Length: 103
Length: 157
Image (tube, rainbow over all chains, first blue to last red; front, side, top):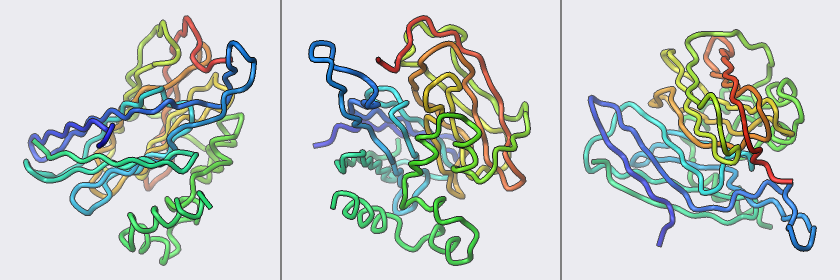
């Protein structure tokens, strides 16, 4: 099961990838409204995008990226049917991957 | 322990590809290698410190080759869509800053040889401020800024 939604489309030799991840992206600066306790930081730090076995983009993030992050990027190459794999790792050591085929 | 696992995972996923070769050849400073999340840069409270730590320099040339697409007015600072495009042949990285945030560095995207210098994401902005994009090319850093008016700040507190 994956919570990463990926859509990849190839056109004129350029593949555009759009993805949506599911994550709270807590900065660590917010406080619980009822208890006043700070909410611990919990956010994605690294996102790696692969086309077949090639890493095409790596994103390094802070908690400044919005909740349930959206990420879009482009690369030269890619044909319909090629696999795209996106993996994230957060600051608490959790990780998740998702795959999709280029259409 | 968690950190150790993360490193193994990253090593495994990157293998000894172009990055490994570049490191071997001494082309990249160790912190530019993906194995380490650049904590100091992300914790830096001003853009200049963050840039120096992340890219080794805070000398940015203002350039109209760097295009930022962001709203003029963001009603909700928690979700500000930002698209950055570099009209350059190749870019090593694209970094996005929100100048008014406590820690301005939001994200840095490391490009590969096949990358098109284009990224789009959504960021949090604490208050009305410039969104700054820095495109790292072989010839130095190109930058641009776009002011975004924030009606409700989005960094909590």
